[in-house]
Image (cartoon, rainbow, N blue to C red):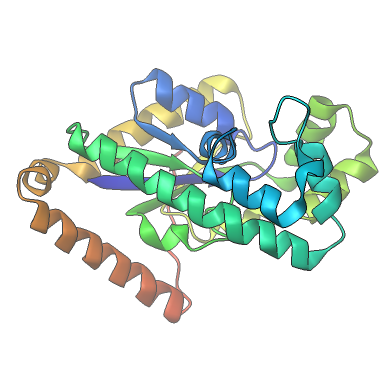
Length: 239
């Protein structure tokens, strides 16, 4: 199965692109949705969080109080590390299972929608990386308009994240969302055609003969590992 990682920065339009892809019938594995799923009441993830941080981080109905948990870990790096150690493995396992389910259903490809694709190890585990891009000044203006925040607050939020220009360095495909929606829609259409061509017909063989799929995955992981080791990252763009 051909797996593509989709990422971007705050207010670049990644969620819009993901929604457009879903409307076109593309199979999407959404990391944000999974992150909420793994801490639902009754989940092992929520039990581990309660064991680590106490019942105080629960709301009266037994659901996770994200705001309270955020205040607990905000200024404590060790507690953030503890939380990440609980959440990240659970999220990765669930994402893998979602990919497997798409593969079992005969899908030729799927897209992993992951905000922190580049910051974590997942970019090395996908066949291609797609980054939704717009210039930082456009990001800033959109963030101010979207959230009604001050320029100072919006600038601080941008500064706390990996610069979008740095993420683009890892992109096989860059989807430029600095213009009109019509331009974005045309690029998304081109993106779908590109990944369809990249998946080709060989996905049928990897589905019918699982060892071929495993061998293909090993080749992809090895190539990504070499890219990281020698400091090279692919670049591409849809215009």
